[in-house]
Amino acid sequence: MPDRRVRGRTEQQHIHVITRDGTYQHITPPALDVLLEKNHIMKFRRSSGWVTIGIDPIRVKDRRDASREFSGPDRRSAC
Image (cartoon, rainbow, N blue to C red; front, side, top):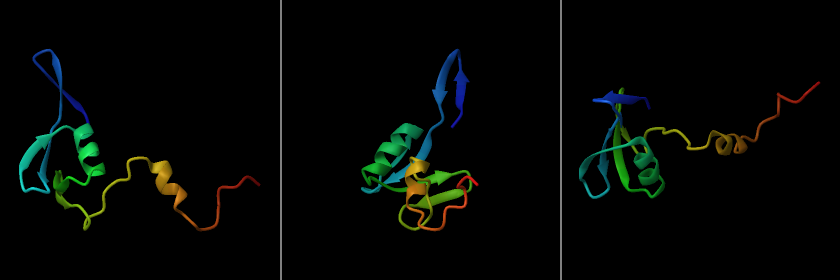
């Protein structure tokens, strides 16, 4: 996510989240990654609306890990 310049310093954009205990917080994107890994987030807000963990699709942290799960034919092999 882009940083915003505020009075000569860089401030990260904050994300609205609802944690598993029901609290509403504003956190940074790196904090969201950590809390998602620890399963502490129930919902977070995107520009398109609220995302519910376990129902709505979320991005895999390392896309290379996601590609290893593909079991179809390899169409990228060299000729």
